[in-house]
Structure formats: structure tokens, C-alpha cells
Image (tube, rainbow, N blue to C red; front, top):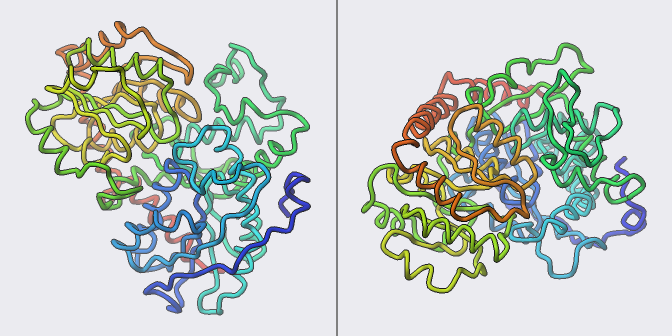
Length: 485
């Protein structure tokens, strides 16, 4: 039984019956996998890619559970993989989310992001009712839930179904997160000291996930969040969107030595490379990919810097001005994808029009990164964006801001494919220093790093190809899900 905060637990949510969009595998008798994503772009896109790979394996029937407002995000998946079914649930009413906040965390403040985690646990009851209403030939035999929807693990237990946790993060980050949440040790407090022991990997307090930093003893909401994470991290199997060549040291010892040890980790990424995504994956681009490609064609190979800080981190006006000044001073060609309402310094676009273009809204990021002219990515180190860049053989200029970003930067450093330019969600770097880093990257000094990035890109592609490490782990996952007790 999942224990919600008392202010939520006493409510009886009023939810309309779930709606199911029939799929081509309806009633086929295959093992039926229910996929429960978390409604954030960084989490959802990768899990939908995995759902497509499972559905096209020929051995499984797959249904994705979403709220009504997120159903349209599955349109590209269903267009390219029509066998995937969808069950839609009305978004639950939660006292912790303001009215009209939307059903997806895209472009929402982080405070709202956190509140989605316990609020979505109210979907447990209606989703369980839907599962129990399925005919025997369509009974749910396995559940894959996002690390932020761990409330689906007891749901699987109630159904007698197998459960697997999915995380869009690296294996290293999951190991650190599990150590912090599950080890039973005293939680580290706000200090510049590392969070590990002398013989362990040390992480500074400021580099821990914000969600962890704000945990407070006695706070019911955060106790519920922690319980959800514990459910996810206590699973027997955890699937991560990563691959062996990116973090060899941390995936080497991933088979548990005993049933009480850490979960078996399966690395099946980069999922953006494993599944042939459509151009509107995650949303319809505000600018056609062909238009951006035509603009990029005018530039030399590897000379363009792509700039994006994801959907969850809005730059402050001071940070926007800093990036704009750095790009202007660097003289490097660039493509800058930003939030729709971002305001640039007056005159910036006109002054850089000959070598820069700005995209407001959803950008065709995968296609941009795969263009031969793009050699660098100025970014926040979100795992999806990182893997898309790695797969394309693009090097990175890193500005980690929170969540798993600092750990991801650690992996990029070890792989030799990145240059640091800043750190911290509130940092306002020196524009001249950032400009120097950009100029160095696109110049001769940056060539060895770009060459290593191209090499790592080949390893990423090889990982998901038949016989590669990620392909083998994917096949193991399919066997696990298809083995119905």
C-alpha cells in the first residue's frame, strides 16, 4: 500500500473511466506489458522509445498509460508503431498543483515539477481498476514504470505481474541515488564535503539532485516522494538509457551478488539511436528540420555550436544576456534553441544574423545534431540531450544545473568529449571566458576532443546494433518480460 501525505490520502479522487485506444495486438495472447511514464520530456521520450522497441520485438503486447492531456505526445509513436496501445486517465486533482498548471512538466518551474511526483500516485487506483477489467487474454503480465512513478510497483504486485523500473539516467547516477536513499545511512547535509566515504566516489552537496537537497524530516510530501523513489530503486531490475562505452567502470559490476544486493542493471541506450524516431518526436518542431539543415549547409564541418538548455531549465535574463554576449564575442556560427518567451538582448539577432539562427519552441534537435556542420553542443547535461549528442558524434560545452547533470558531466569528462563552461542553475558566468571556451572548442585546440566525440558516437551506434552491448541487454529485457510465470 502506498502511503500518501494525509492531505491527499483523505481525498477520494473523482476520475472518469479510463479510455483505451485499441491496438493491432488486441487480444493476441502475447504477454502484455503496461508502461507507466512520468510526464516530463526528459523522462517520457526515452521510455516511449523503449516501448516501441518492445512492441516491435514480436514477442510482447504493449500499452502505455498516460493522462488525457499527454495522449497527443504518443501520436508519433503510434504512427510509426501502431501496435502500441494507449490507456488514457483523467489527470488527478491534487492540492499541491495550482489550477491550470497543465499535465506535463514541460517549461514549468522546478517547484511544480516536484509536486507531480506524489500527485500522480493518485492514478494508482484507477489504473489498477482498468487492469483488473481487462479480459484474461489481455491481462497485464508486466509493468515498466519510470523511476518517478514507483507507485506502479505495488500495482504490479497486486496484479501478480512482473515489475521493472526504467530510468532515463545513467547507471552511475542510479547507483548514487540508491546509495543516498536506500543505504540506511544518515543523509548528508549541506556541506562542501563529498557525500561518499574516503574510499568511495565523492559528490559535493551542491552537485546532488535538487529533489534530494530539499528533503526535510517530517515533511509529508517529501516523505511520499522518497517512498516512491525507494519503491523504484528497490526493484529487482532497473533499465537505464545508457551504454557500456559511456560508463564502463560503472556498468562492469552490475550483476547482483545476492538477492538483497543492488538491482540488476540493463543498459539499453542510446534509445534515440536504437529506435528510428520520427521528426516530431516529443512535439511538432517550430521550424522544419529541412529548413535548419539548409541553413547549416553553408558552414564547414564541425564549425557550428548548437545551444539548448532543455525544457525544464529557463535561463534568467542575466544568463540569457551572458550566453548571447559569449556567442557574439566568440564569432562562432550557432543555432540557439530556446523557450518561446525568452527575451534576447536588443540587437543580438540582427548583429549575428550572418552566422547564427534562433529557434523558439520545440527544435528538431536530433536532426540538427546529426548535421555534419554541428561540432559542439552548449548544454545543461540532461541525459537525453547528452545521448543524442553522443550518438551524433558531437562534443559538448557543459553547464550542469541540477538533477543528474553533474554526474553526467563527470561521465563526459571521463570520456574526454567535453569542455566545462559553467555550473549551477543560478550561475552567471563571465561572458568573455565563455566566449574564449567556445572559440577554443571550434578552433584547432578543440579538434582532439571532437575526434574523440566522433569515436564515442561510433561506439554508441555499435552498442544498439545487433550483437552490441545494449542490444544484448534489450534482448535480455524482452526475455524477462515475455517469461510469464
